[in-house]
Image (cartoon, rainbow, N blue to C red; front, side, top):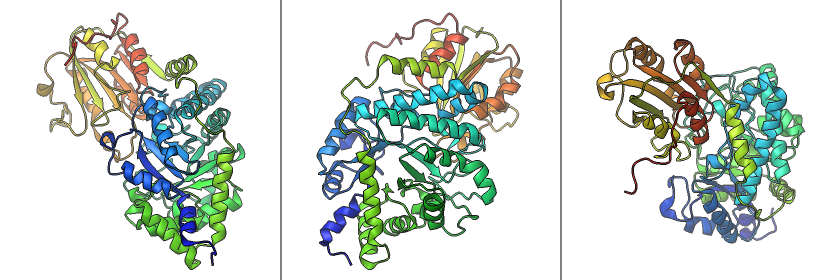
Length: 533
């Protein structure tokens, strides 16, 4: 049994937890209060020894202040991470939001050398900006092979649709992170790219043979491990060929036998968020944490109840269910990871000129323009966004997607999944035209595979809507931002002269480049006609 005092065991166990916090300084600004812990609870947990924080929301400048605040509440050096797979600006406004990795996966098929160069610079940009904001752990690269276009959760987050591209580009991204001095994380082991359900909402099953897993799913992870990736994140999915009972996150066969012993990974193993329904619907927070450590995980990410997880693990170590050697090993791996990277916050500006140039270069290589310029000088700018409150980095009152068409006489109408429906009950004429008004329709679709939506956006009849607008001679043009699979489906329906464009990215730089091509005489977008409220 352990000879240390009980409170010493609790503090040591607490180091294994990574809890969720808002990037905002104030509790009132929390974007997701059901997950973002209040400051009073964060202070208590960090002072009690919790060893990591995952952040979301706020500006990049505010994130600098927030990370310093959180570190000040702790007596030890923290692991401070975020899901910034597409650059720090994906989650924190003002930093660089880069095109989704899958854009480079497709570029890799045409120009491998260019794609590899851009991927390494992508990783370096992300890592350097993360350090400037106080993050020391980037939860990327995504090493899943997105070979299933219906995947509702990975989709454009993957670096490739085949093992070769996904492996090469994920490694290049990881090399960029290493140059920047931050930790990386290969996820979601052993592969989440061929699922049709979202583990945020359900427990997916991947029924492939071991031979198939070795050929498709696991090569990017093997490549990342060989390249020295610092950590691996588990997947909340069942692989019956490896373990018919437990999801990978809770499976000793997957995390210890396969990842540790067979693949030789000696770095940190972190669970995906245990608050996700794939785990939470089946296990309480204490038992989920114990099962994960029992399986071979080192770090527990976002338990549904941090105190319950700590107490459950303490009970497991005291009872002998979990050997104390496992605790020592996990704490040593955590210490080794932190010792491998510089401490402190880089003092240079968060975003520099080279970062902005990379943002624009990535967009240029991931857009496709076809047809003629938009001919109509009045009509409806019908914009479909895939969130009730889209990222301000994608759509705000000043966004080119609104301002450039409006400068040419189009009236903007923004649709989202929780708003009034544009659909009629006529399958061959699905758009309720009487709700839209008169004039030509410029259709802009901000749609990509997003977690928590369970693929609902993919069920909308945009192909039939486009055919309806063509038949009515009311289609002014089509732009797809995000899903290459939606673009692949819609593009063959368009007349050869129809103004149309695809952009992998949804950010304002992508909108600007696309719409300046479709409206060659576009006017500046700085004046909305609204001086103040």
